[in-house]
Image: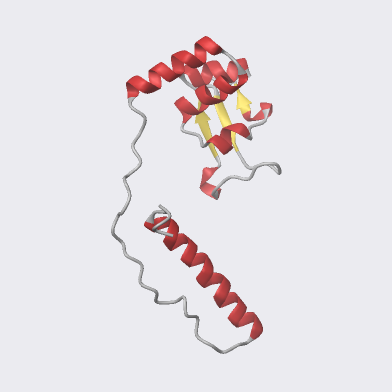
Length: 139
């Protein structure tokens, strides 16, 4: 997994799932055996580069291009650029998730049947500012 470029945290998360499934199978089937995935040593060193934020000058250039092109794809990019939403979160929004009437316009990010959220803590109100407010108004 590391040779394929996955980060240590991704490998650890995958092993956690494997351990849990194996523990469940052992318990459900009453096997009375040891889970061989417990106690596997995984290095904790950081092998990859840390993800860096988009430089401000490039972000401003991108936002200007969104304003100039003014189509639904650019609205999505603009919405993400000032809110920090994940692509899946923004693309799964419904019109009723956007509240432009509040004193501070915001997105009510919540799970939907067509798009769950990554974690429970992902449910949140996200203020709309700058080009994200422009994009929400265009939508």
